Image 1 (tube, rainbow over the protein chains, first blue to last red):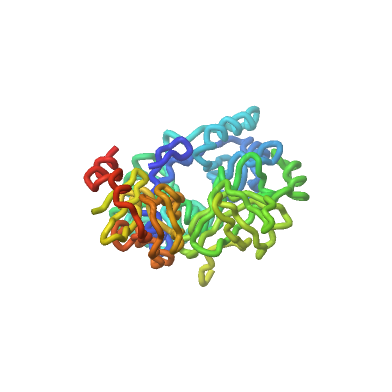
Image 2: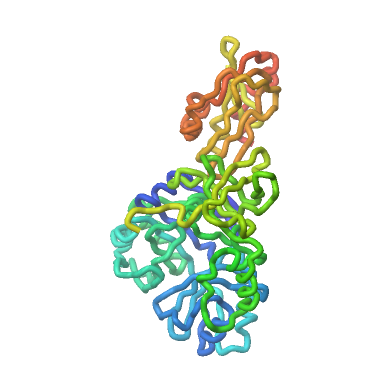
Length: 342
Length: 121
């Protein structure tokens, strides 16, 4: 067990590599109830939320969800989140655990005076993620839910054993999968039914290696209030022609980024870790590692680093100082994991 | 006789050759091992010198020499299969052998039963 975002979380159940492999080849189940969700409802919600988030909410249909950011005035990332459009005037942003309290306070403050209300679903709703190529079969077998018609970044209402839930075709592993939202007792029942059907429970360790191979950022590593989507190469989630908090600063930073987030590969199995320094061959520091791990499916050590823009082109070679040696690394392209047929 | 250090290495002295590895308890704590940096054959180590590095999906840890000596052989099979340490830390997962080990240096180390007790804390 480890502390994560204020919660005691399992790092592993059967071992990180075993869990990782099960998600890539069959299916794995993650208890992601540490994450928080808010409910925002009211006639003024669309306009008010559009000022707070980078997502284009006007083109987001009821039944869909979209990834984006909560920025501060300097375009620093307060959080990255997926927002679900639950109705014409109803929304559900799903946020990280460590930032949840600050997110709620910030959004409450920003939405004040608008015709909408925000509430925290912390005590009434939990979430589990079922991920892997066998997701749809297992969902049907264990819970009797047919979600095969659900497209990526769409959600639906469903029920099992008398429990209501929301299912979205989303996830954080790079595999097909769903996230299931329901009241705590229903989520517990779903967890028990799925694990009884043979789904592997997975901890934070595999969640991290899976998301890294898939090329997804992790808040607190690739993203924080000192970085913006401009440096993180995530401007595609900020495209809309209306003002939002941080937009001016974001466009300024995008025109002349001081550093850029890049994926990298090391030569062998030895990994670089968060906080280590990126250097040129002559020892000049040019950046910092934000995440690094052995990529179990990729078969080599991979990671993310912020480097100066002149060192960010794919194929650029530099070194990572791990305190003992300079590890040769090459700027890669995403995704790390290239699957046939995708 | 196998002896253990407080840093969770083991050493076994047989016929003047000492075999060294990390303990089963250590591999359990580390989780899946993904990389090992082995010492160099011929390298002379003092007790407590860094002998290598083991990395798991969780963390990187230094391996310290349980006694002074000269590296005679290294288990190169671990370079491509570091998971052998998870499977058999105290047998096939050995890291290196040392010659010239002073047996009196092992007197300060823990016996298997003392080490088992130590790991309970």
